[in-house]
Length: 241
Ligand code: UDP
Image (cartoon, rainbow, N blue to C red; front, top):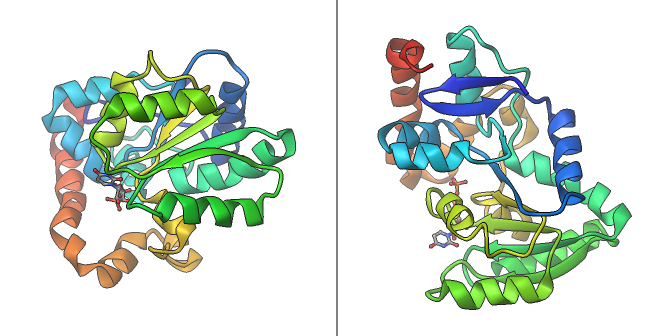
C-alpha cells in the first residue's frame, strides 16, 4: 500500500471507502490489527519523539485524521486522496458491523461517558453489540485488559488522548483479545454528546480547527501545533525518507 512519509510518520493513502473496507477485513482476520489516526499535532509530537514514531509506524493502518496532514502531503508533492478522520471511519464501520452482529468495546473518557456513548450507538445501530465499556481514568492496566478479554470484542476503541492511547495499544498488543484496536481520541465524548463535532461546513472546508478553537479556547496552545507542523513540513519535510 502506498504511503507518504510526513516527518517520519508513514501515512497510508487510502480513500475513506478503502480504509473502511480494510478495517472491516481486519475485524475478520485473527490476531490484533491496529489503526492509528494522527493529526498534525500528533505527527509534530512524533517528529520530536522517535520512539513514538516507531509506535505509530507499527500500525496496520495509519490514516490522516486532520486536514493539516492532507496539506502536509501536498507540500511534499505526494498527495493523499482525502482526509480520513478516525471519527468518520468508525461511523462508517458501525453499520457494517451492525449488519454482521459484530461487537465493540468502548474504553476511555470520563466515568459515564463510554456508557452514554454506548446507548447512543445502540439507538443508531440496533444490530451492533456493545461488548463492554470502561472509563479512561484507571490505574490498573491488567484489570482493564482482563475485562476486555472476558468480553473478547471484535473491535476495541481506545480513547485516552494521544500519546497515551497509541502507547497503551502498542504496549498491550500481545495481551489483548480483540481483532482490531483503534486510537480514537475524543470520539466517545462526541458519541455521548459531551463534545460537539464541528458542523459539516467546517469539516468540508478544512476549518474544523477554527470551530474547535472558538468552542474550546483552552485548546489554543495545543493548536499552535498546526502552524508549527506546517513550517516543519515545508522546511524539513523532504529530509525524511
Ligand atoms: N482521556 C482519558 N484518560 C486519560 C486522559 C484523557 O480517558 O488519562 C480522555 C479524555 O477524557 C477525552 C479523550 O481522552 O475523552 C481525549 O480527548 P482529546 O479531545 O484530547 O482527543 P484528541 O484531540 O487527541 O482527539
